[in-house]
Image (tube, rainbow, N blue to C red):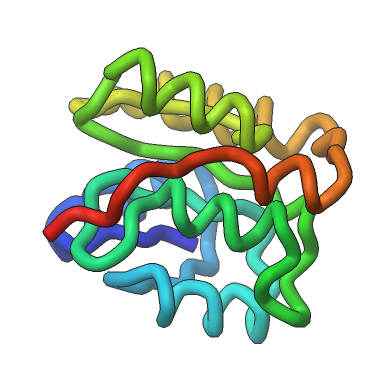
Length: 141
């Protein structure tokens, strides 16, 4: 599943993954829609942009890890794709047990390696309350 408010970025990521043999994709442009689609479709991995209107990719990951959406497993594989490499964003993503972090512009090799690593090992989880205490920051305006 690819979640990004910029359709051209979504299509770029999907094209890259298709080159590597992936065949089924779900798309979303915002966190609320993505939560519903992911709970219904059960994707192998979610690749989400960080900077989206209303809620960020960190809000999305937090909702997954805290179990806020019924039907969506807390150990869902999740990769944050972003143009932001700021230390605070990285620290928060790590505190939420992100499975991978890729900074734009992304290369095919880096994206594929990150997805393969995310899918290769289970996500070790803390209690949902541990994730609830992670501050994800304010949503963009």
